[in-house]
Length: 144
Image 1 (cartoon, one colour):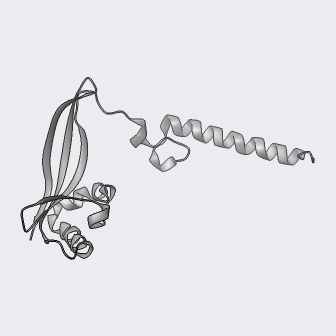
Image 2: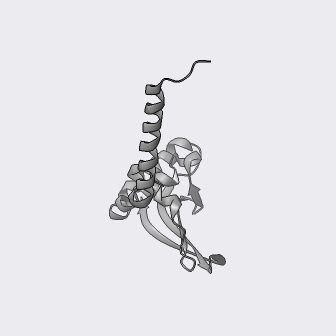
Image 3: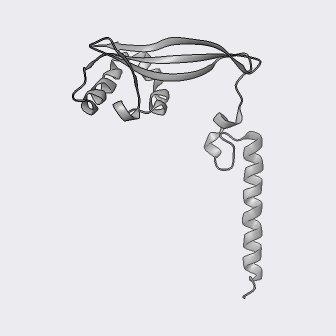
């Protein structure tokens, strides 16, 4: 077994100190862009105990009137993709036509969609516990 040279030990200690300092600084004042030297804020903050937990859902309504939850399997769209662009969809709901088109391409034998909605589902809490009250608010709607 070979011993690590003095230069190798100094380099390892220096790199370790740099990582420790960056992690400490990131913990105190960093944001998501500092990762991996700072915590992701989205995982570091708890929901307020008496405010609703918000979850987005994308729905479609077909020509028979049936409401369908649209997801990655049936429409090729993930919730995170919708969440990342929610302001665009609210400003221009016609952008939801792309979701309708993706659904049609993946479901050729099924009735086509005539409406696509982005719904905010609010799970109400009291003392950080679910109350059973759920409110749904349509944030964006596109109809063909």
